[in-house]
Length: 457
Ligand SMILES: [Zn+2]
Image (cartoon, rainbow, N blue to C red; front, side, top):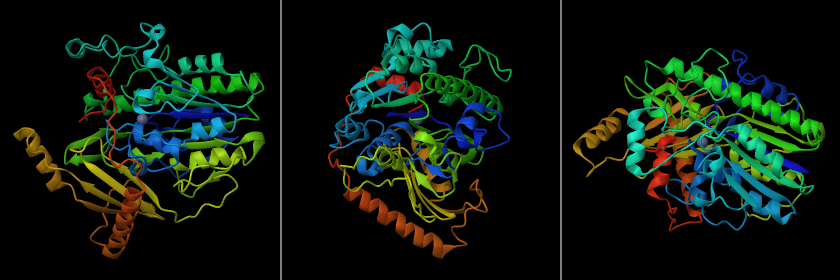
């Protein structure tokens, strides 16, 4: 069998036609949904790529994998999704256009891994992050980076076509950043009238250009969707569609000022607080041979469920013990199953964690005070710490956009969920595989590349 795990980075479900009928961004994914089971309430375990990738490939939470902060390397697990598939006789491939999903960060557990930023044949043919302005160019020169490109999903598909078919059982992790910042028209032309030369980094989003950024994001989704449609057509033409297990998913969402840091300072991009816009993800599973096609599941599920689901569909027993994820294949999913998320980029960044149970979501926020990092940074961290309520409770049924903090009105519920959150965090901490977390061997150059992708304070 062929198994495709197709990750669309930083993709919010409410910008997709199959989750929001008001959107016209994604006719191909909408069509794909007719053959798949669609999960309405799917969640990541975090707000950014690396810990989400670790959850996807281990079936565990970031605290268990020890992959929380930016420089944490994904530890050497005995069992991962690719290693279990390999033991079951599958040839495993990873084709990634996100630098976090690379051998350097510990994701080398595949028979082949291809990180497209390192592919010299794409340089000059793909948008370079040094292009947009003089200031960025100067900065890149200072840190000694020649070029940093944004590969496209069509590059990923070309690689799949080269690699596929060597044997009957093959697994492909395909990681596309078409829908990740920086924001610009990915294809030959814009779908909704954006200028091809427009280019906006995540760090440059503000209230004045936010609507434009949203339009560019829709354009990026449209391009990604068209390419996904081409990929599905290819699988059909090759007779590989019906029998394959195809999972489309995002690693996390994206914020377009849905919430603010302080009054008047909206949050953009991802990596900040675990609000719904950053943790809810699209998830569609096309099982082989039409099983559960066209179904919609409302119960909450999480990215950790993918690992056991894949092995269950393939009728392979799971070697790993005590996975946090549960198989979704032919399974009953509890309505009140807890959803647990955490996010913190560096030890000095804002920390946020949440637990959702039924319609209620509790959020815990902690902003470390930045001492020894200049008076301006100290002041900012103090203001945010004072302004930001540390404890929040939302009723997602009545208030899906998390606008009304019920913390003081529903103290009993808040206290109960806070205890549950703390208990779960402690349990996961005890299960952590890496007490002495290894730091990834990351060069200054790579740090700068990641900064350009929006991963820094
Ligand atoms: Zn990501």
